[in-house]
Length: 222
Image (tube, rainbow, N blue to C red):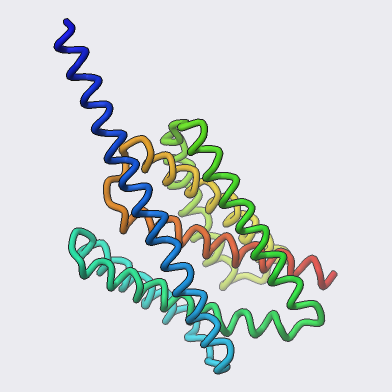
């Protein structure tokens, strides 16, 4: 009986140690990719680079995403991670320039940035402190993904007043749920690959920022 208890304790300790390693690596890589992405966004903005467009952005993102998935267990996965986040930074530059053209564009961008940082820090801290299992959010995330995709397609086909604002609000909730779910998966041993964990959190932060940017932009113009 005692041997079984010792084995369970050692197994639990090993899982927690591995989870802590994944967590450190994830946050370390996330910080680097956010800094790199921000630098590329700054260059793209200063050089007035054109936005690649919706379809090319999708192709570029998913192409690099699936390539990173394939290479996630090798050093090449790190290279494709920076390629992916750098590409997303490039697409962000023209968007920031568009908002800077608004009368209060600078304050809108800074407010969206501050709110994104606050939401991410708050949600992450909640899970890290409570170590609560957020796996129950998987169903909501799956359904939310398809609902948002359907709403985006509807937005291209139909001219529905307020739909874009509703989509942005939906992405705020969706991204927040993914942050909770992914952080919980890391600390509870459900996520063992820090590269994929980093991309998941990065994309959530990116979508959260853009969604808040859109909401604040609409509200500020009313």
